[in-house]
Figure 1: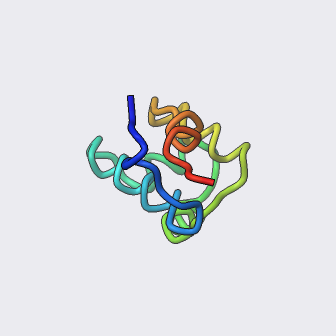
Figure 2: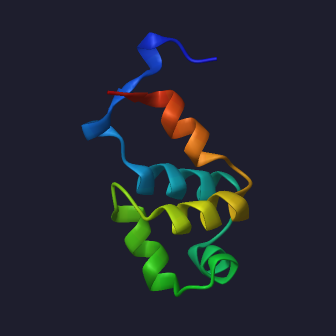
Length: 79
């Protein structure tokens, strides 16, 4: 469980970086993820630079990487 010191202001949260870090930790490529979520590798590279992405795409990425980004974001977000 996270404590108050682990919270991140919304302006500092960067979803694309979290996704890229998870993909690299798993030893997977942008091409692999693109195939999993049915888009182009170019779109995945755009995700890496995006602070926020659409909920349907986040859902697909969460399933592909087997990581609940929704829960993590809600736990870490300081409003």
